[in-house]
Image 1 (cartoon, rainbow over the protein chains, first blue to last red):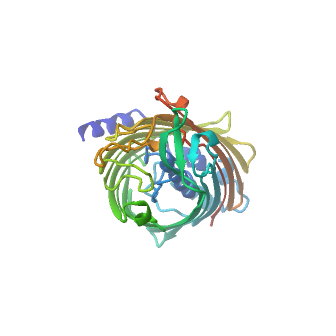
Image 2 (tube, each protein chain N blue to C red; image 1 turned 90 degrees about the horizontal axis):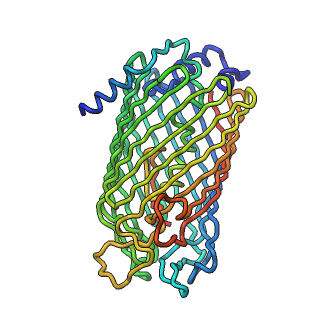
Image 3 (cartoon, rainbow over the protein chains, first blue to last red; image 1 turned 180 degrees about the vertical axis):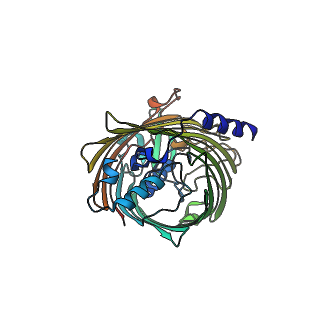
Amino acid sequence: MKLVALFVLLVVAGCQSVPSWERGVLARSDMQLEGSPTEALLNSQLYDSKEASAGGLSAAGAGCGCN
Amino acid sequence: MRLQLKGRGQKPLLALTSAALALPAIAATQPVQTELSVRASRYEEDSVSKRQVLSGSDQRYEIDVQQFYLLMPVARDWSVAVGLAREHMSGASPWGTVKGIDGDSALIMTGATIHESRTEVSTTVTRYLKNSSLGIGITHSEEDDYEADAVTIKGDWDFNDRLTTIALDFSYSSDTLRPSAALTFGRVPRAEKQTRSFGFALTQVLDKFSVFQAGLSFTESEGFLSDPYKLRDVRPETRHAWSVNSRYRKYFVPLAGTLHVDYRYYTDNFGIQSHTLVSRWHQDLTEILQLVPSVRYYRQKKADFYLPTDDFALPLNVHQSSDHRLSTFGAVTFGIKGILKIDDWTVTASFERYLSAEKYGSTSADQEHPGLVSFNVASIGFDLRI
């Protein structure tokens, strides 16, 4: 927990302050970390059912994925 | 800015408010518009080489997917999201792997007689406070032989003038399997598994053109984790998986484009280790049109109990699986996507080609699994914001 707190402090301290009137680019749809919810769910279903790793990069899905 | 704010029908105040509030680091803010999305996708796997099939069909899976998603602000500090997905699958899949006549692995495939549908319904309710939000979601997924119910709790907290966000999430899933034709083929008639997952993520605005996120997640699964449709597949009954994730977004003003880089390291007690690297480039072509080429690279090390061919001489309590997804391999995906924005509408069309092979992996396997799959996915989606 201390390591996580230290990591957060270091990251926050090393970044620039961005006033609200300069946040226009950050609001672009292609600057969002998550894409479309439907696309994220589809990718999660596809890759999680074809590879041994799951989760982390997109939304969680459900289902057997047996085949 | 060009794509987001210059739609002819968009109200300026609403657009400005959206811009200020929709920052990646302000996940804890109520959406100001209703979002409606529909998407249709077609997934097709390549056939297996006939010389690698000992019996059954050489055809693989084809899947049609239809999705619906609605996100609505409710009252002053709530939102409700509803998702619906419907899939129809048909084709054949590997049943087992044995030594062929030439000594190489050969597949025993099912006939191309599998027809199955899956429906998934989900809803999430989120409450927004001054600098934080708390969401609770439930998901139900159902197909003929499988049923899953999941609950997710997610909290976000903004601070540092809303340039930093910490997110915590927990999810629990309870799944029930009822394999078809269980008596005929000696499959387990009914089995269960439970999955618990914890996640932590830190998102930081680095400057006015870039954002970074780092995350850590842990997933624990217990119960029946084998594939009931394989001839011999015996896996441990617990799986502990860790993943470390990072995502980076940077807008380049001179190029009018945005770079995405995502990376994940994954490891679990099956012995699997993997690396995933995804990169996309969002290029503005005009004020309403964007082109997005992408590449994804994945590689994994095999599970400790993976065998290239089924060993029917081993006792039933000894772990083994010849599932190609547990073998050593790598995969490359090439994608292209077009995004057209007109007024409140966004139309997205995309195509991806996924290629997997032993040679794309980092370490050499004794033998490439003949079941490794390559596939195409094509999608078209319509999004409306009002």
